[in-house]
Amino acid sequence: MIKSIKHIGIFTSGGDSPGMNAALYGATKAALANGMRISGIRRGYEGMIDGDFVSIEEKDLQRVVHKGGTILKTARSERFRKEEGRNAALKTLKKKEIDALIAIGGDGTFHGLLAFSELCTLPFIGIPGTIDNDLTGTDYTLGFDTAVNTAIENIDKIRDTAESHNRVFLIEVMGRDSGYIAIHCGLGTGADSILIPESSEDFNWLLEKIRHYHSEEALILVVSEGDELGTDMVASKIREVNPSVDLRISILGHVQRGGNPSAFDRMLGIRLGVASVKAVMEGQKNVMTGIANNSLTFTPFENVVKQHQVNTELQELLTLFYLK
Ligand code: F6P
Image (cartoon, rainbow, N blue to C red; front, side):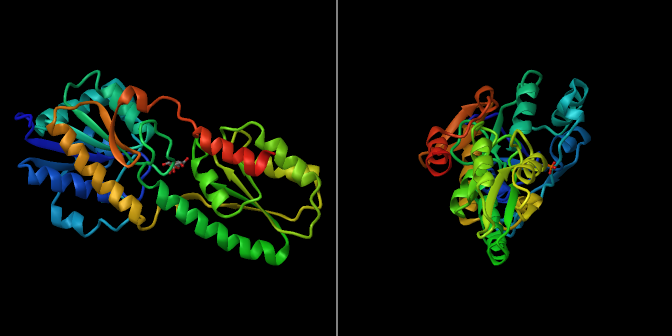
């Protein structure tokens, strides 16, 4: 164990995701069991700048391990993007005598950590927490499984009404730059097409389908919010090529970010929380904990923030089900 680490600061940042509380629980348990102090930093980088620190108790976290959201609250910090903000955060960390930082968040959080590591020599460990599943270095990010299940539950419900009316539903799911959520819930609900930012052929294929569509059946069309055309444009093109389509648009939105984490996300959070403290104790720095082939991984921040793509196997599934 690195003797100098006595006090860990932990925070959640960016969009909340189900499983963040479980990760806090895991990290807190591991830190306390190894004789370290752990403090929560509220509202992500914002709280770091403002000195908004709270003590966190294992007992309190045990009671929220099943809850979505984050008890530490979260934020997207504009101030931390500027060097002035990062300097202010560094000052606070020194004042609070923090020896190591654990961050739970997505792409923006890791960009922040990378920039901060140029200024601050403390060890940083990251935990992937985003429903988008768009970080390199882990098979799954915290909250993705729950978000997909929520989306699937809602799409199944939409199908009931779509089939009753023989309507066409264009359903937008989250994923700022990534089609992971769209592919999983599209295939899992038997959708009739899936549009993702990573494919350029999917839209033409859909238009052909719509051109030949006769109104005696329902269609479920899933579109990722990150798709290059955007949901509104897709809808207007559908109406343009086939004005007889009885089209409805449904944007699932933030409902996908909430709700109790799935069993998978609870366990993933606990495992990654514990792993992040172990990483600190082993002297690792500037790496993200993750999971690949059900084993822990540690990926340098520079690789985490690289452009992430839907993997080849999933791309092939899309081709097999929709583009042939
Ligand atoms: O956290 C990821 C995410 O939910 C994306 O899927 C989405 O594009 C974005 O966050 C929405 O962010 P906000 O809640 O800040 O509008």
